[in-house]
Figure 1: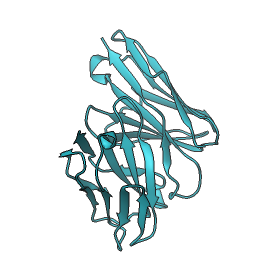
Figure 2 (figure 1 turned 180 degrees about the horizontal axis):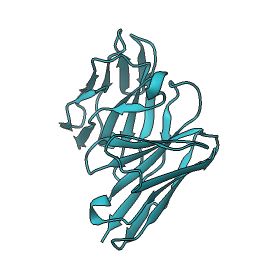
Figure 3 (figure 1 turned 90 degrees about the vertical axis):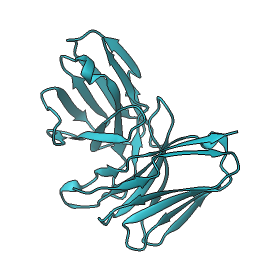
Length: 117
Length: 114
């Protein structure tokens, strides 16, 4: 149980393109999903907290107009990297909570490797 | 801002050796989670510890949560090449404005040589 699916797994596109990444909880409902960015051989850096039916909460330093987050249902959150540039190239990972009040673990998707040419 | 200091950052050992990874903080966490991540994949949950002083075992892996719930350790006995990966500790808080968010340590890249 607690499977999180992330799609696509790998994207290569030209500079200036907008890219949408989907995060789905397959066998549970997730009122809260999280989006992370990870550089090679480094830890995860939280970008934003995505809440179903409300606006996302962004971490300090993350441009909300650059990284658009939509959490339209209890099983789907999307991250759109708008007008992507080479510096946006990274590994993006989403996670979802299975519920409860903070002591429930987060379950992660397999990540999306984004390469901007 | 909560910080979780994880050490060592890099660990290169021979098969059969034992190792310990530490996570320390000045903050109290309601729970602490350990993940293992392989290149190109998402982190996979190994264990969640909740109670101060708690010890959990998962085959050759032993996890401890400090009495004050500020620190944790992961001990691997007789490491094998299959243990190679990035190990991440993450602290969680049950309430307040940080509800649900995880504070990650810097990660430990473990390489076990045959």
